[in-house]
Image 1 (cartoon, rainbow, N blue to C red):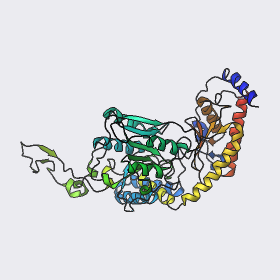
Image 2 (image 1 turned 180 degrees about the vertical axis):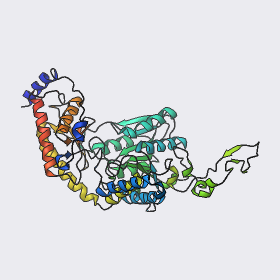
Image 3 (image 1 turned 90 degrees about the vertical axis):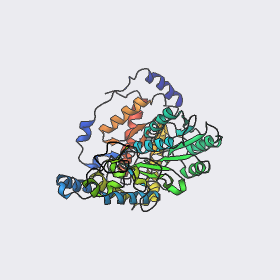
Image 4 (image 1 turned 60 degrees about the vertical axis):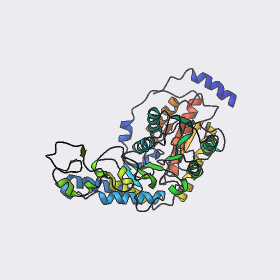
Length: 452
């Protein structure tokens, strides 16, 4: 019973040493048969479809023969269009920038909001407790620069979840004076446990009150509906491609509202965002650096202007520098095409049936979820009060390492076992996961858990 469990907690807490990290590289590198694996870490990295893998192999062949490498420009434009279709942005793709990471995208947004005066001293920037660090460090830096400060919404304790807590915070804001909320930066699904945020409700509030609304959609783009940029009234939406967009590591796609296209600056300065360098003739010429508008290498006076500064049109002016990666882009394009064939509403129903089953079957182990709505594709199992003292973060990590030895993969994030199935997850994988967790937790409660 509960009393016995609590007695065991006191006994076990005083006897179990902190777990040490175990190298499981040799275990995972020996796996060759996918059927051996129960994979529930899709919120960290999804498996890529065969067509994505094939695109990568083909492009490596191109790279080995540089005289045959196709121009990445057309591929980049197709990537913008495909991502636009997923988030219901302008179908031309002109609202999409291509950058190396979501942290890069949000840092660029933060710098531009500060540079254009939308973040000022004593303003507040609203974020969630335990948000992914990519959504936090950029605002910390801007706070240091501007004198603004973070306003952190705590984990919800009521059934209204994050959305109710956020709206309560926004509704009590006076929206005037120097300490107003100037920026709200949110995910649709919290990265740690899939707890849901109603972006439509919050976005409309932000638009009505002239609050900049920034969205990290990494954990929902490509797998969750209700991600229509006009409906959520966002200023920026960014998503890394290596999760639910079924791409490789190394790229984030960034929606930028058209009102900023002629105002915002890229985070890094380079020729590929400039009009002049869109023409090969400019690189072929000589004495292109200008003095007061005159191309003259004999000029010895006047203000040195440098290369022409006019930017290209659209959000592409905010692309990161360097030539578009000729291996990654075709892989990203294939992944996006695959996503665009999915009915994400059906996907959510299918995945929620999986996570609901897992929650139901593990609840008797003392595992529960944070109050409030959650998405179907990510489940965060947290220890309830009866085992909370025993199931510490270090202990949970050790359990995950033990399961990894059995080829069962999940993660621990912000006090929760993060479980993220995908459409190819089988009932056998679910059974293995539940039985694995059951064995680990019951061994722990019985005092038989052995540190290795």
